[in-house]
Length: 125
Image (cartoon, rainbow, N blue to C red; front, side, top):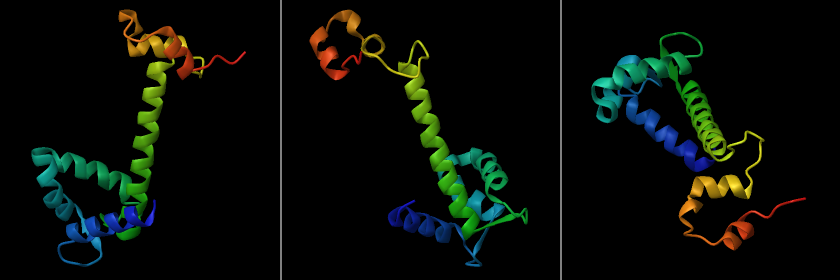
């Protein structure tokens, strides 16, 4: 997490920490998340509490907040990347060849000449 991300997470933490005691309670999180999730806020907050309340004291301190935010962003990014890669890797070989790329990108309509696909992904023998 770079300094910009850390600063953003610090601001969010302090906005949610209504009584400025340095910890986020379930109630503070529900109130803050209601703007984004509406009636689903409590469900999201319960998930966050399970993941972030590392010491089990019923609240999230700043260190727990940063750890949970960093881990969730990394998990989501890794998961999205794996899903996208698997979508292209039709034969599950661990590589994306030009034929898989062509099939996903819709070459059946011949909107793109084969030489373009060849130049995008060069075959390695």
